[in-house]
Image (cartoon, rainbow, N blue to C red; front, side):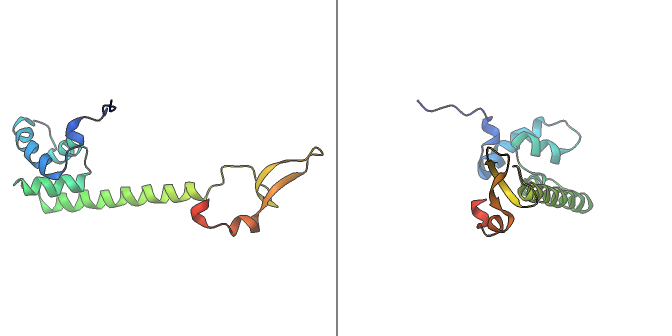
Length: 126
């Protein structure tokens, strides 16, 4: 038996189905920002919401569109920089000699990969 998805069907729709469903949704929508509402209801980013609302004939002021697209680009850039900084963090014990401490001898001396050895590992393996 297949496991039922917990995600609402409206958030799993492909573009064409979303556009068809949006016609009925727009008639019932009474919120302040149709772009944010569309984005949240259908589970798409605001840039996608703007494109699809325009296809449906919604008039979106150029200045608002530019502002939203700029903030979306900034949000994505921030997300990428955070992800990159996390990738550069070492989530394990290290010191000035060892980049990755595997363990300690009975006398308390660390052993593992040196920084030089760690730097020579291909990035896709780390």
